Image: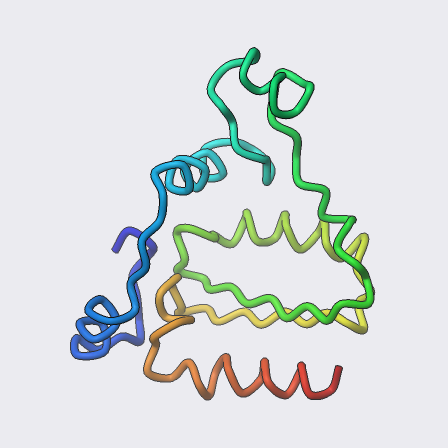
Length: 142
């Protein structure tokens, strides 16, 4: 339940996923994920002190990612769930407000699934109908 109370998982799917689909990651990736949860904004990796950040970014704090640099013609299908602790509703709303100001709205679609937590989007038993089919339809239109 680290990522929220999943509504749509079954035990056999979770076991199979954990046995065959897990991938390793680095400690640096995990630290960066925790930084993005703790700090405001979507920032580059924080090296922990101004001197190290200056070496990498020429500034004492890591810069925000420039979301306006995403090409506006690129189709963007964004999903989020009401029970997702990793990408919670307020953070997602903030991200959407930023993207809506810069992205072509005709090339963007948002799907909100109120009962979904983080893992439901990947291995939820009803994800094909609720998420994948609308995403494929969107991509075929674009």
